[in-house]
Amino acid sequence: MEQIPRADGDARTVILCGALSVDRAQGLKEELLEALGEAGNLRVDLENVEKISVACLQVLCAAFRYARDRGIALEFTNPSPAFAKGAADAGIPWPPGSQGVQDVKTGERMEK
Image (cartoon, rainbow, N blue to C red; front, side):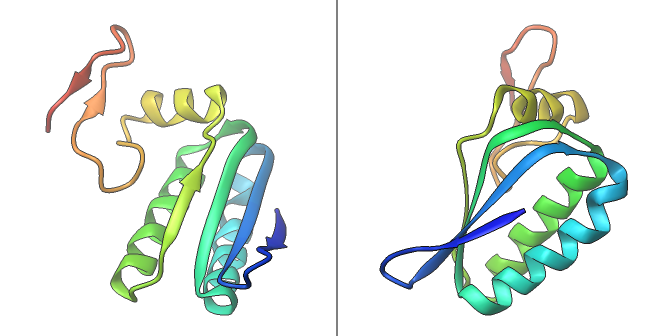
């Protein structure tokens, strides 16, 4: 995970890369909590995610709730096709807080 401060100093961008397997979930949690504590507002770029486990998806959802509950802006940007497929396969609505899920077989949105 790479962190890039924004020029305006208001938010930090975290870039997630590679395969986010279950063994990376704890480290991801710790790094996101640290980034949220330091940055105030945070942007997480998902463009370079090659694969994502359910455990790492859960960490991202928990980070969203953590930020929301504390009034911190947390934005997820540029989900890669592999990330989108991982979320859909897991049945996790993306982005967090969105309504409904996408049917993996048909690609149609289903309301909860």
